[in-house]
Length: 239
Image (cartoon, rainbow, N blue to C red; front, side, top):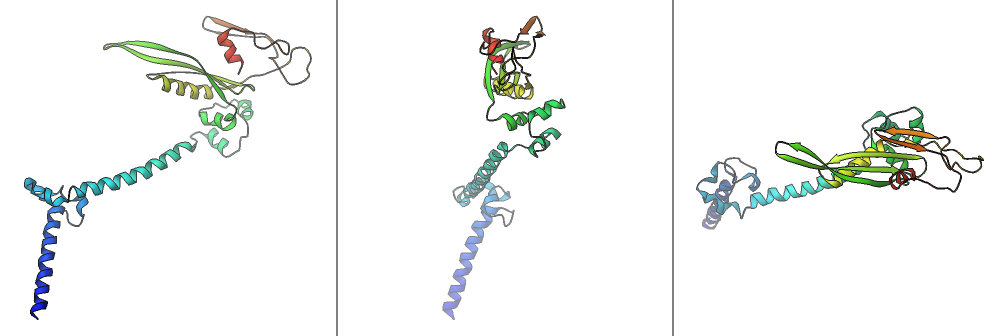
């Protein structure tokens, strides 16, 4: 009997010591463990730091946060690669109701998502940075410099587009110009000069276009002539 009483007294002391230490760590929050502990009302007098177990509470919470963060980031990267259409045309394309760009151009449907062009021309689409120039705006604090990028895209098979974007960084401006060029992509009608044998190799008629003070005229040429133009227009016409 005395031995059993001694064991019972020892267990009671041990439980009391554990309960005291846990009570300091948890404060008055009750039952949240060390993770939400020392932030409670029992933190007083900086005496509770000894019972926080070497910042165990913060470590536990941090570990949980890092783990969830990693899983969340992985999921977000995968979600970024998946295309979620936001327009009716995009949903029709993803559902394979529209099988070519020509169906879109036939009904003059506006393209609002660059992923639509990527869906049809991803393997053959090429882009060329035509020019990157700095532009400035006068503000009360001085001059604000930004960068304007001009990019041409095409598949060298009758589709070409030009995009312009201005941004504070060159890389962001180029990326935005590529997306705008894909949205602005148009079909190019091709024809023959002379005999109508083989595949179309030139434009069908003479064409004139004007933008600002610049006038551009395109003239059909025999097969094998190539593109006879200045350096900058030649880059666009080769698409």
